[in-house]
Every structure is written in C-alpha cells, then in structure tokens.
Image (cartoon, rainbow, N blue to C red):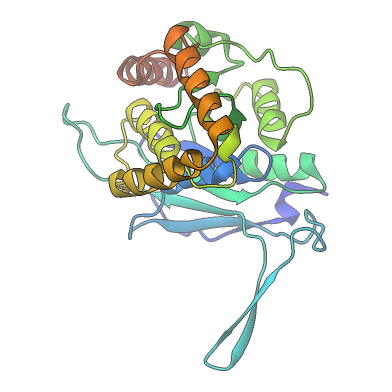
Length: 294
C-alpha cells in the first residue's frame, strides 16, 4: 500500500511558504493527559488556519478499540471517525527583526493500530510536499514530578549537527515505543531534520488535565520556532492547580509523597534542554545553513 492511496490533499494554490516546519502530536501512548496534542493545537487553531490534507482512517484503526462517534444535528445523523488532518497556519506577521515568522504545518491525529509504515510514509509525503525544513514531534509522558512545579521540557534529535548546536541528546531509549519514535527514526534515515520534544506529567494525576504542562511545552515551541501561540492558559493553570491541590489535600500519604517529589525536584539538576531563546537561535541557524547548502 502506497502513501498516496491513503492521503487526500486539498492544498490548491497556496503559494510559497515561509520556512515551514511540521509539528506532530498524536493521541495515544505518547500523549498523557492530552498535553502534547493541546500544545500543537495552540499553533494551528487560529481562524485563518486551513486543512490542507488528511489521512484516510480506514486502513489504520481497529474500530472496536477506537470507536467512531455518532452525532445528530437537526435530525441528521453523522458519524465522526478518527481524524488525522494536516493544518496549515500561515503567519504573515513580521517578527522583531522584520523577517516574516515561519509557517507551521500541524498534524493532530490518533496513533494508529495498524500499518505504521504506511502511516509514517503518509506523514513524510506531506512534509516533503509542503517543503517543511524540519519535523518536530511533541509528546507527554508520565513522570515522577510534583504538580507544584513547572514540568521540565526535554528533547532529543538523531540529527548530529542539531544535537551539537542545540545541546540535545541523541536518542538512547530502549523499550516499547510509539509511532512518534518510529517516525523520528525514519526521518533520520531519509536525512530529514527532526526533533522530539516532550513534557512530564505527574504520574499520580495522569487522569487530570495539566494546562501547566501544555503551557511549558507551547512556550518552548514558540521560542524555538519563533512563532506565537494562539492560546492563553493562565486561567486554566490557576483553576487546575486548585483542583490538583484539593485532590492531594484529602490523601495524607499522597501529600507526603508530593513533598518528597518537591524536595527531589528542587535538589537535583534536571536534564533539561537549553533555554528556549538559545534553542530558537540555534535552530534557525541550523535551518538557514541547510537552505544555503541546498
């Protein structure tokens, strides 16, 4: 099965894009508390964002696990299937240096059950067709961190020059993985620059929302890409902090555990990526060198 069989394009004549980068956030194993997909949505939810392509869900899902939803609107029944839409958000806005901010192609989808290689091939087909200079996968994972601290954002890249410039580690994880991990490996094999950014979610509150984690991830992406977000999460952060605190207050053992996590979090030097501003400068420098070489 070729990727073109499962892809549909609706780009039309969109003209040239300004240094586009693709963001990928997939519901599933690498999206604890939906923090990753929420962060990507912060860059692709403006009124002028348009869907430029989609992946047909039929070959990729076990619909007894990822069941479609049925809705009724004015007496008309509609079925809503898992969606994997590529959304283009053009900036058209000049940054502080007078240069237009980059365009973003976002994929917010659902991690597939079947045909991973074909699914990944479809993503790369769109990235190449849109002229994306790099692909950034975004994830959220459960970690032993306290909800009272801003969670660290960590990153890795298999692109040696990017790893050196951005001070990121090269992938060293061993164990079960998700589509994002396989996608990054395939991008490396095809010499397409890629970065994996991920944020931690307190493992004892995995079923709650964590706008603080979404905000931390979106803030790093904003600085790295030099693209503003369209979402202000300040009120949500405050509201959910109250909810989290109330949950902890009713459990003596959990409250003691959180204090231990706080002490450990404050004590150790977290393995964080460099500051967002430094990352953004080095990322832009790397991509500019790539354009010059091309």
